[in-house]
Image (cartoon, rainbow, N blue to C red; front, side, top):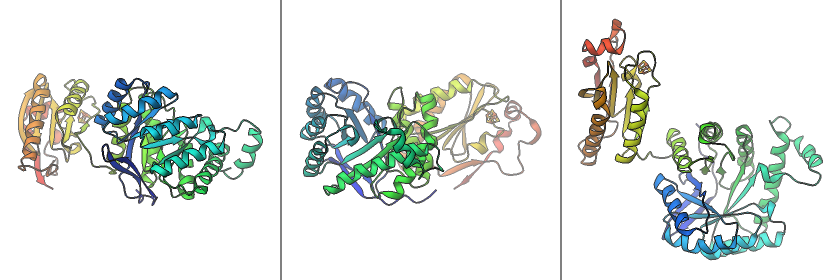
Length: 417
Ligand code: SF4
């Protein structure tokens, strides 16, 4: 893991929705975008609130028509999170969004042909201290005239890169756009340059990070449904963040955008870039030793804990006790299954041995009681860990079933961290 890249810091929000920062020493923010129509005020507000509750720091809305920016004024009054207006083609929409009190504008200067129009947006944002994201996408960057010639010229510079021509073109365009903003002494700028190709995303943001000190908004665009989009996004975004690059991110899924928020946060939790909220669930993949329906159990545990537990309790759901205790080391609450039963530990203390059909209920009960004790100051998260002292006391007995029968799980020991 490399240190975070030093960038300028851009403020977003107001007293009512709260002030947040992008870049500098601010935490990496997670964004998403509404999928419904902005002009449908009630539905838009409800959608924004759903994302805020899932953990979104910032929510973007599209404003393709006048009726959308008209609705924005009312929407902004009702929401509790900074709102970004996504503007393409019509500079008037940006000016109307600024009038409506929006907290940030996303602009692609490439699809607003008149430079004076872009300048009007910059001046309006400067007057109100509203930041602008200069968002360049692979799909909207291609120059129509002389495209082949231009790409051939620029591509030589990035000949060693995959998609070198495209990379060169996106960088050249960004430099051109940033010049427009700098010429008006406007520096509340965030930059993005998205592609659907994770390798290109890594290359282009790495280049941008070397060339500009503005904060960067990361994303893999058109990443597909969650099933494939998650892998594409994690491949690019985790690499960049681990290399110290990135100040805010949006995961893009062709499915429920709540998952964009959850997965964006999970990337940051996993890389230690944000303090976890809610349960951290670990579970084994199962193997030939399994003797309970672990997949169903894990799914149910995940759903229930997400609703019922606020604190970042680490919960382990393990298929057996062969590797279970070692793999669950550090879990506050753990269940090790076997022989259609589950043995439950709370910070290494064995608290229950229940039949399979009672595992879920008992595990939830133990999680809730543990959380209550933490809240009362009677226990601390991650205070004790489960471990098996060498030599492995379970030894030669084989499957989890045999071990539980033999009562050898009692020999799992606990140490304070
Ligand atoms: S915990 Fe047990 S059942 Fe799960 S993968 Fe490991 S050995 Fe297999």
